[in-house]
Image 1 (cartoon, rainbow, N blue to C red):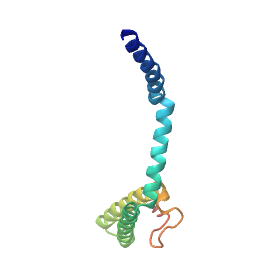
Image 2: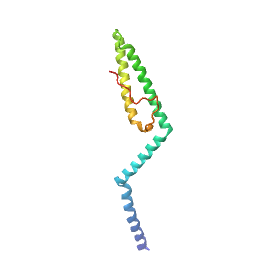
Image 3: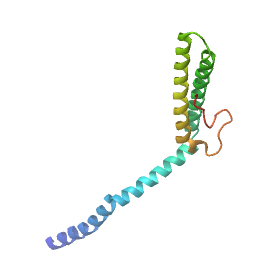
Image 4: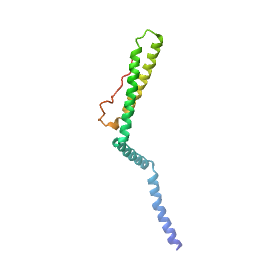
Length: 128
C-alpha cells in the first residue's frame, strides 16, 4: 500500500513539475500576454463605446483649439500690451491643444482604421 502511494505521488510529481515549469516560464507568459493584447485590440477596434469616446474626445479638442485660435487671431494685431498678452496665452493654449490632439490621433488611429469621420481632422497645425 505504501509503495503504491509513493509511486502515485512520484508519478504526480513527474507530471506536475514539467507542467508548472511550462506554465510559469517567461516565454509562455509572454505568448499569453501577447494573445490577450491582440484580443483586447480587436475588442477596442470593434467596440462602439471606445469609438464614440475617441470621437467625442477628438471633437472636443478640435473645438477648444478653434476657440483659442480665433481668440489669438483676434488679439494678436492689437496695440495694447494687455491684448498682446492675451494673444500669447491663447496661442500657447492652442499649441498645447494641437500637440496633445496630434498625439491622441496617432495613439488612437487603430480605432478608426482608415475610416475617420469627416469632422475629425487628421492634424491640427501649430501656430507660429
